[in-house]
Every structure is written in C-alpha cells, then in structure tokens.
Image (cartoon, rainbow, N blue to C red; front, side, top):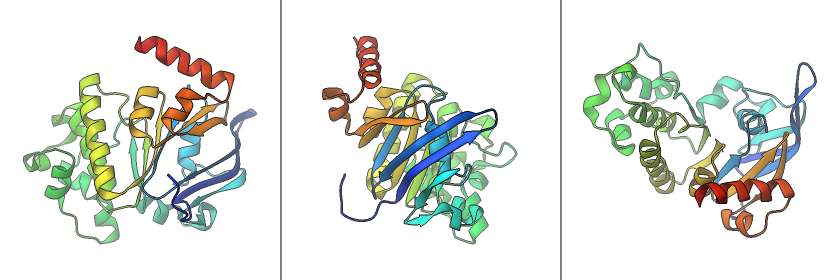
Length: 246
C-alpha cells in the first residue's frame, strides 16, 4: 500500500538487546503506511512483540529509532504517546473491578474527551446492555471485543495488536477477526499486528513481515510471500503452513 505520504509507523535500523546478551532486534527497518495493516509473524522469540512495543515506548531501542507520525518516539512523552495509540494485548487487559463502560471510556476520561460507549460497543458487535457488567461476566470473545472498543475509544489513527486473538476458540476468533477487519476498513485505521498464525497474518495484513532471530526475513503482500519466498526460512514456514492446511 504505497500512498507517497510519510509512514505512520517506521523503524529505522533498530537494535535491541536484553541482559545476558539476548538480542531482541537486529538492524530492523520497516514502515507502515496510513490505513495499512502490517502483520508481524514468526515463532516465539523472533522479535515481533519487541518491535511492536517500540512504537508505544514499552521498549526503547538501543540503536536506530522508531517513529510515530514522523516523530522519533524518544522525543515523545511515553504517557501522551500511549494515550494516542490504541493497544490490544492477548489477554485484553481489562480492569476486572471496572464495568465494561468504564473500561471502554478509560482513555477518553484520562484526556478529558467525551466517550459514546453505546456507539463503541455497537461498533464491535456488542449490545449496550453489557455496559454495566464486569469482565468476569463476559465470554472470552466479548472481553476481546471490549478491549478493541477501548483501544478505539479515543479515535486513534493507530492501533497495536499483540496476539489479540490467541486465547480465543476458533469460531470466536474468526468472528472477532471479521469485526476488526470491518472496523479497520470503515475507519481507515493504521494497524500493526503481532501473530504466530500465518492464516491470521494473511487474512488481516495488507503486508506480512516474517521475523526470525530478531531480524525481518521478508516483507510483502501475502501473495508475494506465497509465490516468491525470499529465504529458506520463509519457504520452510510456508511449507509447514501449507502442509497443515492440506
């Protein structure tokens, strides 16, 4: 998805290491355009989540830089940055002692912005009658839909998704994925998605970035990866995926 406009998210030559000599990212560069979804796919420890979290400063790079809307994240206040970006984790991260309505309105309340909870619940396919319930009274799929509603509540142009559907059963996962695609396309949201599931990556990503050992092996549209894997690893990953689908 090439628009000619500056990317909304960009990593430039990013390196990240952890104590004990563990390397999280090795010279990673990638750009995500406005209204584009890029899916980061790879095995555990490949660097997907580390890269994602650079963009809301849950991690900072050791070298290189991450940029959001053209500004280096190191120049931005982390709290202000996080409030301007939607974020959905695998567990949803809902506050258990708060009602659905209060969870959804969290960021708008913090920044003094009005929040139409009923509209947001409708956007993710939930009835407004759930607004007074607590997370423990919801199904797993309902909790993830609430988490997506909360991520969209302040109307961010960017949303980060870290394995958001991994804990759901296959039927619910498919339903929530469909809701996300519908919302993303309607709102023109830019999204970066972490997943280990190639089916999910190909379904949701305009482009897919395959990661291994902290580096990007290949990035491109799903069809390009399927037809022309750039490395042996990408080819092996696709062969395993095709074998599992057969």
